[in-house]
Image (tube, rainbow, N blue to C red; front, side, top):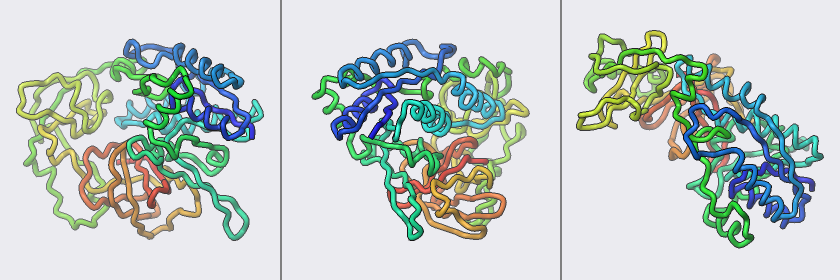
Length: 391
């Protein structure tokens, strides 16, 4: 089979390419450059040139074809511009999820097909299964990776059946130490390279500086809300999912000004760094932002009630099922395990489908539910669906 591997210059995609060649496939390496601007990028983090050099070294070592493609315009339009618009609206997007949906398994896939690819492989720690139903239709499932510490299925939670029909994840059954061992045994140049961090293809950034490319600084006030504020008291039933899904409606009258900031759109729920306020027994955490009024609300301590809610809402048009056969009908309730951020331990929850939205009611209150992030739900190892948190 002719397989195009997304060689990123990291150890995971390098070993994926090696394993595919060992399995007898015709393997082609394709490196994509998706970002040129270094504004806000922390020096020494994820330099694209070094990535390309390492990718080429691996291709040479494995004796496979190597190609290069520049997808930076697609990436800017479909991922980075989306990031800016979401932050401007006071939400916190997840660019890695968008990068996989819009770039790696769309724009990159199209480039791979031009090279005659029958399948496209990446170095993600996840797995794929397929089965045929009674009508002869093939269905594809996305499963968590075998390594619980590296499972990356969450980042692929928006993939479609068509995208999964082309996908291969050669290292999904391996643990990270095994991947490193294989790379060292095969003397791959990437064997000891550190894993990339930060925004997909951009790297680690100083977020306010990065966002100031398009979002201007706007000085505003920081208000502290005390934990005993009546705003956090909800005298409703535990299963009142609509009320529990509503963010706390904070106002400046609920607390006092304790500092200033450079723009509410630069901050996110649960954040504790970058406030510039010290002298506290416990850290201050952001519990609310108001971009219209340009106010940030904070609370002291990791157990502040303003950090926790029991439910979230996903608008109807943002609900995504990896396979439509699993879609819920209006009025239906189902039990799933859910996570609202990468590497968060799965949480028990009830999903309730209404005509206007999907509600996720957790068994226990969750810390830092953030609009713009993705919630993903699982049945055992199978990632069944996902959606953008509306509130």
